[in-house]
Image (cartoon, rainbow, N blue to C red; front, side, top):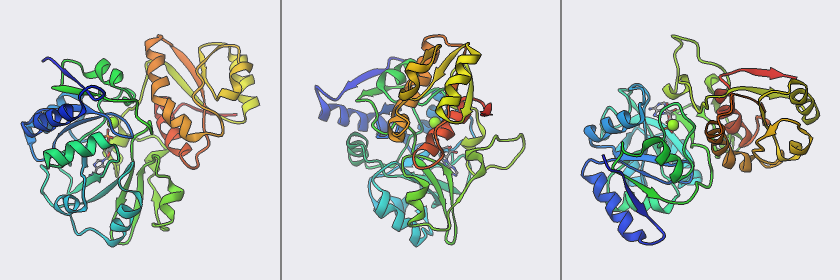
Length: 339
Ligand code: AMP
Ligand code: MG
């Protein structure tokens, strides 16, 4: 298959129109969102959804997020929507926030991987929302990477993973958030954080004071265990390098990696000059949003540079740090060292 490259700087209108047409005709297109690049397909077309799973090599039991552009569309896709879900929509949409609700059965069952729930997000990125508006259909869009590899935050990452396997890629800018959306299961009297993202637990608690945190966010999935979010049981975000997540103060991290003296260090910018091995700074210690922006780019760079081993200084688990920690602990296959 030839993957067409659609440009935004030269012919934005034409690219949006073409993307919507391909999607309406059952094709699959990668396009930027504010979180990561998504691989979109009509959520109403089971053959198109099948193509998404195949192109990504995604396990069949891992459901997709449905992208919408209006509350009207939300009401078509989900049913028995609790009042608190509307409050969240008002506060966090459009944005990097996904709600798992009861499915109305409007989107095809392969999108939900056979569950009776559906994950719904209203993205903020103007390209994605213009495409939904033009196609007038909800779009299922998982991250546009090969399953298991770090999520794509640039068109170049998408091309590396999926060129020749999808109909087109919209050549947009680097994604501004850099990690995937926050996912929350919302029921009438309860709420559970399934995946942390740029909408933080602290922000959610203002509307959902009783929200709980799914243990799969920080802990390893054990074979056969039941999971609230099927995606959480899979190996994720993994470069080929053997990575270790190191928890502790800056001075202890620096002396640990200098003592080990092998592989590389994914460190904070403040630590770079003190470390003797090759460094990959992924943000300032005080800038969690900056870490989220960089993390997948850096994880991909490790593969490109054929790095075999590395020590990662863990961010704190508050704010957006929780999202970065969650991606890193999985990239490290849960090898955590507490100093
Ligand atoms: P991705 O599409 O790669 O961003 O991954 C979507 C994430 O949302 C995965 O972790 C899924 O398990 C989760 N998800 C999607 N739909 C549901 C659902 N109906 N129930 C629980 N988790 C879901
Ligand atoms: Mg993904």
